[in-house]
Length: 185
Image (cartoon, rainbow, N blue to C red; front, side):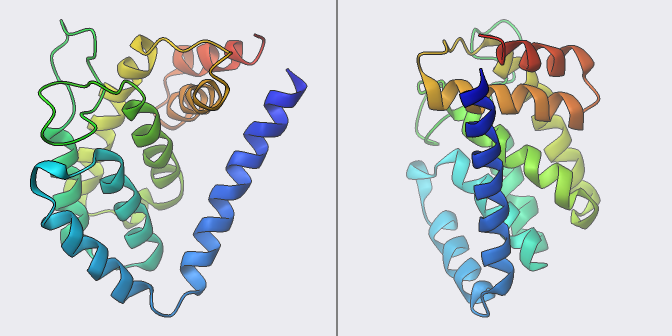
């Protein structure tokens, strides 16, 4: 258990380092514009987690508000909204996928979504804020339905963080407790 806590702290520290490096890069706006063009032109090869990465980086930089709204609109289109589906709340990895095939997508999307919500929700437009909150609430169920054992260490730790982080951010006490219980395995 102790090693898992250390790994979780390392993961969160790396996220903080990434945020600091983005803020200090004078070319970040140009880089974001180039990244946005790649996303906008990706077509069926658009990757859900890259939409969340773009939004977080743009919010850190204080730019691209319209693009963030569009990124979240596309991400919502890529989220399974069928409550009867075993992958409800999860995301398509690629836009071309007919359903969520790589079940880890919810982990990657929610880890960035949670950090974004915690640090930058006040910078979001009202439309983007509503969209992100809705995806996180659906994503909470996607996290619960995604079965990951402790032997799949990196994804297990990411899921643990997500359960705690989304639970805390969305005031979902039971979800947070489930994440905390995962630390005991």
